[in-house]
Structure formats: structure tokens, C-alpha cells
Length: 621
Image (cartoon, rainbow, N blue to C red; front, side):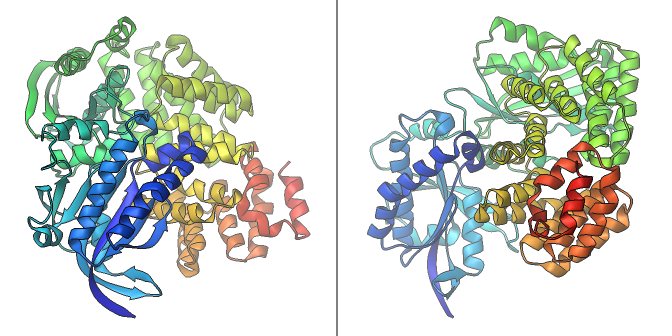
């Protein structure tokens, strides 16, 4: 074991999961070509050593800080040229972070705080850009034809002290005007093309009542939905922006992390029958205000306020609205504001994702329909609640009623992506898989960033043993919602079935971190506990896996889905008799999807050669 001071260079691909979901074979081939034809040679020329490749990234050490930064700048400039003729949604772009720090060297690998800091700096680098620590900036000095933009002290994940970070201006001093860096950053936005890109941050609840949080969140979501209907805009989805909820953030940093040029932020104050909404449009590069306004209205004007905000953004960004888009954003989901507030409350409960909250959400949606019998979203909401209760918690619900509610939502609004996703899930519950997949395709065509469409689609594919397609949609769902642990942990067994060991381990690590956060927030929910237990087995932490499994059973020992997943954990731990006992006990009472998963679940592969497995298969028919 050896210690030394070195420059650590960490890089990865922006939006790698999305690219793999679009074209796995093409993405891998392009990434290998970029490394072979461009990156490897430049690293060697600057005397760097590639320590390891990590799927979509690499870790490199350089004896010289100057060489490390010069190499990073050359790679990013070369990548810009190589991407010149590639469609924006298919481009491979790197983020690079560099730190000068102390490392431990053992068996040609490197460890230590210096490596961790470099990796965290890389995560906040701009797409197509380079970010460096203060120690790197100080050591480079004026030795390179580059400029450095001070981003201030950054609090980095799992690093116990703030780190000063600088963004590198790759084109300073090489004859290109500095204003061109704006176009470089805009071109680096994932999937944006030439469209203006925007993220709507969660509006602050200024009502003085935490119970009104759902209303502010609902306004945010509906503005995102309206903007997403405009083909001339690239809009970040709800689940990505809601990771910033309740956090004090630097707007320019958020814009860089999300890969957008503009941010919309605001606040909502609801009191009795009055509402005050403020909004401001921020230039994510300069941090300056593009527009700001305040609306003091009756609560019944809330849809008019949303419409005005949407049209103002369109005007400010000089986006041309198509006739059908004008109609779509002008169409209010309901004329009844009270029904709208019940719907928003129900939607908030659905996001919490447990049996008790699905039941509460269903009551809220039913009340919304009572107030407005033509409320399409509320019918879709009830259908989703019943589908989740059937699939996750074995509640005896009417399949006919699920299908009827999803069909009613589409009858009222055939263009509603959420309604098509709900219809697909309802059809899947009824084992009408081909029809279900057609509905998911329609939902995704109307809203490519709809998390539910990809998540439901993946579950339907899994139930049929279509592992490649399930992997594609679970990966997309996990990317769309960075707080969702389920998609990521379900990917673990999918990747195992596909014999993709590196991806299996990656999904287990990432999914476990997400499950931990949810379990801390909702300790009454057994699902993150038993799914996290499975990931712990995959990662080799058997004792903690047993602890998490015991916790899940203590929370809800009678739930079929809990016992099913504990059977998976027992099997992976080698406790075959316990796994068989759980399966034989639950299968006579299980629904068709649970039985299908038993047949295809790779967690049970070690049971297939044992005599008791035939009994399990008979029960799973």
C-alpha cells in the first residue's frame, strides 16, 4: 500500500441511462469509439494512467495537475467537434471533474478522500464541461490558455467540508469569442436541440400551513404539464425538479445540474377564497431575472393564473405556439376549484406510495368526481389506486371497475397521457398485455417524460418475461424520477436475468441508497425495507439483509407482496426451506401477476433444480 499526492480526473456520460434506453448497442459502440479514437490517446500523451473504467465513466490519475486539466480541455473540445453532426438527443457528452489530493494506491487501484472529492466535483460539472477544485485552480495558475469561473464553495455529498469549485472556460484565449460559450452550453443540453430549455422549480408554500403544501405542489406540476405540451420547449419533468424541494440552492448550479438555460420559480399563498401566486423567470447562466410578476386573485381564477404564466414564458422565450398547442394549454382540467383541490390532495397521497395512502387518495379522487363528474384525471387516479392496491397489496378490487374508470378518463379526454397510462395498467391487471402495451406507447407519445407510463410498461414486460424491454423502461423510469427506488431495485433482478453483472451491482448500490432515504421518511412502509434487503444480499452484506428482511416482516407480516419478497431474500441467502415455505403459503392467495413473477424471477433460479420447485410451479399456474 502506497500514499501519494496526485491529480485525479473523474469522467462520466451525461444522461447515460436515457441513451442506453434509446439505443443500448449504438450507445456502447459510440462510447467505445470515442475512448479508442480520441480519449485514450490524449490521456497517454499527457502521461495519464487510466485506473479503471466504470461502465459510462473513467477514473484517471496524472502526476501533473497542468497535464490533467489540459487533457480534459482537449477531450471536451474534441467531443464538441465529434458531436457536430449528431442529433442532440443521441449525443454522448462527458462531465469531467479534477481534484488534487492525497490517495492510497493498492493493486493498481486508487482510493481515499481525493478520489471521492474528484467524483463529487464531476457530478456538478456542466454537460460537456470541466470542473476543478480550488487546489487544482491554484496549481494551474496562468500556465494554460484557459479561464476559470468561480462557482464558490460547494457542499458535496458525503464530503465533510465545503470545497471551492471552478468551472473551466474551454475556449478562452483560442480565438473564439467568449459569448460562444453560451451556445456551447445550450448545445450541451440533453435532448434539447435548438429548443429553449426550462425547469420549473417547486413553488414555495407561503400559506403558513404545512397542510397546504399539496396545493403549491399541484400548481407546480400543472405548469410543468402545460409547458410540456409545447413542442418548441424542452421541459424537465416533475420528478427531477422535485428533488430540489425544500432545499436552499444556487440557481445557476441547479441550471447546470439539470442542463437547462432557464428556471421558473415562485410561491403560492392560499387563504380562504383568495390566492396569491408569484413567479419569476431566471436566466440560468447569468442568474439574472428575465421576468417577474405577482397575481392576487380569487381562488376561482387559479387556472387563469396558470394560463397567464405559461403564455408569458412562451412570449419571453419567443416560442411559436401551434394552434393545437394553444387549445391544449387553454383547456382547464375542471371548472370546479373545490374538485381541483381534492384532486391535488389525492395526487399528493399517491406519491407517498403505501396502502393507507392509496386508500386515502382514492377517497379524494372520488370526492373530486362527485363535484365534477367530467374530471378525467380523477377517474384515472381512482383506476391507478385500485391497480396498485390489487398488484401491491392483494386488496380484492373489481377488475371491471378499474377498466371502467380508466376508459371513462379516456372518453372525457383522449389526449391525456396519464389516462392512457392508467388504461394500460388496468389492461395489464386484466392480463390483456398486448392492448396494455399499445396504451403505454400512446401515453409515451403524448408525454415522453411521464414516469408512470415507463414504470407501468416495465412491470407489464416483466410479467411476460420480456427482460430487455423491461430493462429499457425501468431504466427510463429510474432516470425520470431520481427519488424512486422501486424501478432501480427491480432492475437488479432484470439485469441478473440478462447476465449483466456490472449493471446488476450498479442498480443494487443506487437502489439501496434511494430505499434508505424513503425508509427514513416513511418507516411504516415495508416495501423499501424488503426491496432494500434484496439489494443488500446482491452486494454481499448478508447480516444487514437479514435485519432489513426482519424489519419488513415486522411492519406487515400478512401482506402477500412482503412475504413474496422475503422469499426472494431467503432464497438468495441460501435459506431454501424458508423460501419454499413462504412461497407455498402465499401462492394459493396470490394474484396472476405475482404468480407470473414467480415463474420468471431470477431470484429463485437456485430453487429450480430442487424437488419442491414443481409444487411451486403448480401453485403458480
